[in-house]
Length: 65
Image 1 (cartoon, helix red, strand yellow):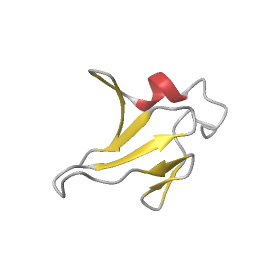
Image 2 (cartoon, one colour):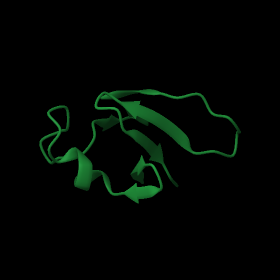
Image 3 (spheres, helix red, strand yellow):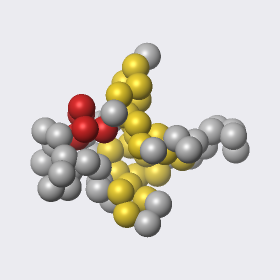
Image 4 (spheres, one colour):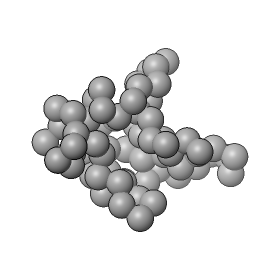
């Protein structure tokens, strides 16, 4: 499940991505085959951290399982 991390908040992607020009037709991040297509992967500090990405609009997105 993808979540958007903003300071001390965790938001659902549809709350943020719905107005993004880079989102897909349903207002969701472009997530394909385990990668965020509208951003780039960030390096993990610890192996136990979820995969995190920096989207083109500047938000941090995490893949929480």
